[in-house]
Length: 231
Ligand code: B1M
Image (cartoon, rainbow, N blue to C red; front, side, top):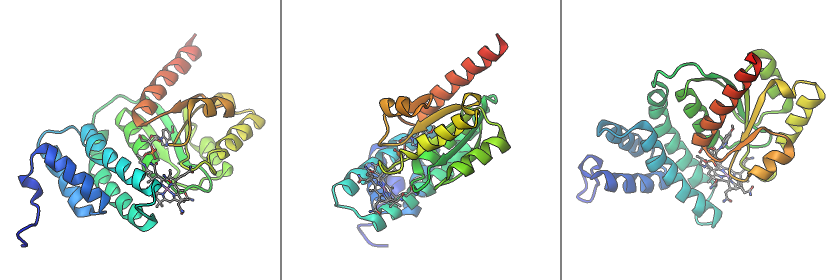
């Protein structure tokens, strides 16, 4: 072992989280997995581990990608390392024993292959007691509609990370209107380039800034829908 090799287990919590930000930046999947396991074994909640170690680290990656310091291959490695950590956290986030809240179909829109945020939303929704059918990436309007027919969910969730793909959400919503099925579903949208105004303009029920907001919004709107149905 080299003298300068960092032993993650010897680091304090704060040092470990900083090191995990560096390891995520460097796309070191095994180190990220070890870091996640260490934080959990030290009593960290899965949610804090996710947000403070992984999501915060990915924000740094995002800023340097934007500024031309990191390029696609490095970002892919970082994304892969993040997925390794998320894979460990997923069952822990889900194992909250939350009562069934409803069902959601979620997918990234056509032309867009970003899926980390969508996956996080799916995980958090499952953790909150929702059944989730994840359609993956690059979804056409036909795929969304087929899944709605098949699953009969309470909620349709759409994710877009590119300014060029976010308008496709309107294509999906407009098609739902044309087919007379828009009012049957709660439509939630999210993704870094979106905002409240855009969500209103395309006729979605709500914009969700992050996964936690998605869960809170979903709970509130499903409750409202059930109350209306029982009235
Ligand atoms: Co891309 N990319 N990318 N990328 N990428 C962005 C989005 C970008 C902002 C980077 C930048 O320039 N700063 C930029 C978009 C610019 C724009 O449109 N204005 C960009 C670009 C340009 C591109 C390419 C075009 C680059 C190229 O090829 N030249 C290309 C496009 C490919 C395509 O989709 N057709 C591309 C490719 C890639 C990779 C493949 C390398 C990789 C994706 C890997 C993967 O996802 N499997 C990648 C990544 C990783 C990023 C950044 C760095 C990080 C995205 C991420 O995972 N964030 C991103 C920069 C950034 O966003 N800061 C960037 C972490 C994640 C937890 O956050 O996804 O925002 P986020 O999700 C949040 C919320 O938005 C919300 O909750 C989530 C959790 O809290 N949310 C929802 C998201 N979806 C929701 C759905 C909901 C509710 C809430 O439904 C109910």
